[in-house]
Image (tube, rainbow, N blue to C red; front, side, top):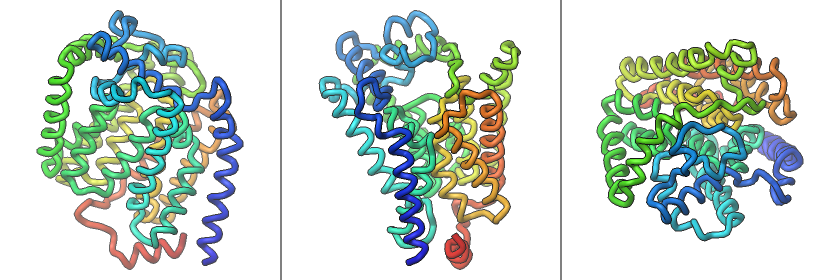
Length: 381
């Protein structure tokens, strides 16, 4: 009872902080709430009128990765635009509200399953605690992008069967290209390979039958998308941005590729060693996904939420301290510290350390932690 009251009180305090810092401005004119949905809705409207979801600017060449370009900046494969076609005429505010509610509902269903012990009420409180403390997760909910959905997908992959995790990896990659390390890792692991490939073939087949021209244009715009200009705003927490700030612009791409590629190779190694799409392989693959772009917005780090919930009950005290430190450093985002170079350096170090800690555990999907040990750790929470 005491722990439940403490958890409930902590959730209430964090909800108040999140409201004051972020959500109380959601209804005001010019708010960022659901802003990225403009890209998806406009893409759906273009798809209906021209047969292609891609704007003339994106078809012509790379564009700057800035908020002003959101209306023209649809950079995803065609399926997302196709899903928004039925919503193209729905008022924007309605779509934004539904987007937030649906994500909250999905998070409430999926993320408690990541926690291996305790009554549902307590697990929901823990999810609320971690989710409300995470500025990236809150920003993903508010901004209308797919980062919140990706975090929920990661949670599902961590606890699903191997074939189920493979299917989720395929869907995530077709929603947004950067999760391709998840798909490649799923294909590299035999238990998830067939379902992952079948999911890709099925979705692409149906999508192409609906709008073949959209896929032709996707092939045409992909080189432009890969060459999009990097954001120089403080919310870009990528290694490439730090390198540019140091005056080494020529090395930015190399550094970004080295970090993302290193994690991707690590994920493939785990898939081979574990002979399955193990939780640690998923964790390393999502690290590669996080660093896959030279613009790493703060909301990309929403994936910390499912990873924290999953690994907390499966690691020892020392690793827990690193998990707390990583999440604690991200707390500076609530204070707007990302405008400072030194803080972005600290965030990058914390993110790499966090992934290194959770990615060096040896929990396999087929070898769960013994129940007695899980309960002992839960009682120590």
